[in-house]
Image 1 (cartoon, rainbow, N blue to C red):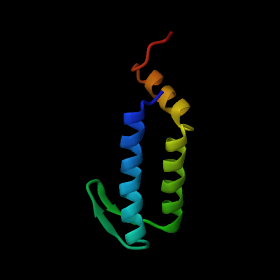
Image 2: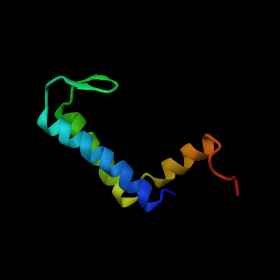
Image 3: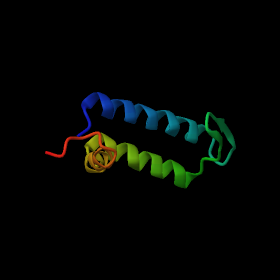
Image 4: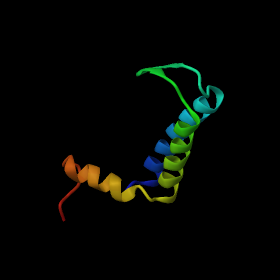
Length: 75
């Protein structure tokens, strides 16, 4: 399960991306990983995922990810 600090970090990353997407809908944005072209669909996905992280819905996926990568005990 994600800790409160981890949840806050992930939410802040989503907030940052949402802020950029809102300002640059249908425009090319130069990001660290390359060019990004945020659309309304992308914005909706980002907001939905942020909300899922906030309410804990993604904890099961996070635990599975850690399990598969050997980061979590198999107890």
